[in-house]
Image (cartoon, rainbow, N blue to C red):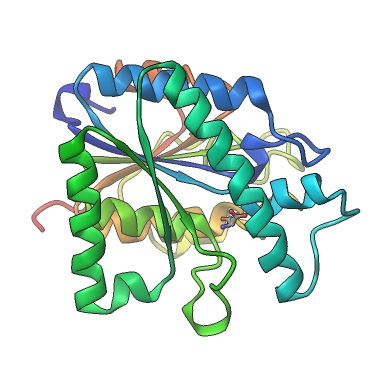
Length: 264
Ligand code: GLU
């Protein structure tokens, strides 16, 4: 169970499948509701980081492409278009609730190189100090080959780690980790708590998820592992109703809670 009183700094990651319709267009209702909930939590005194996917997916929709490009330059180009649209809308929605956002586009080496990591941390800390909400995505326009995270799940875990967050919430299009693939097995049950990520748990995660995002459950487990090793709990939960975040923080059992390793 999540204890709201212990959560001062919260990282929320939202995936492409949660932010967009099958058409590739933005789910405006969900995005605005997410901005409202996060603004409200910020008003209640929490520091918030939003890690957003959707640049490539939204770019594909906006450019009217039939599908996600298979080539890297195609994805880079789509991301540059989609990222503008994403930030335009986040700025508008958070602005409606009196909040200011700052965009951080990062690549893996920003977290690996010590000096860059410290620069990045400084930017986060200054944004918190200024009362702004950092909105992070991978810099998909240049994040190719060896510097790519490839999925925003691990990116969100690294953001949680670098900001010393108290909780990471990964919003996705499924209720959490199931005992079997719920899309194929009707007897699959939701696993509420994972005390330790072991081979058995990894075996439960199938391949990738939808054709619009890049993740799937396996990347969420990797993210939870990074966070757990940094002493941070992770909840993977359905993002279809962002108000569920309130319920989670009120102690309701939602999604799958991956427990942090204590004693770090
Ligand atoms: N950075 C990618 C985007 O914004 C998404 C990566 C992911 O789906 O995890 O389109």
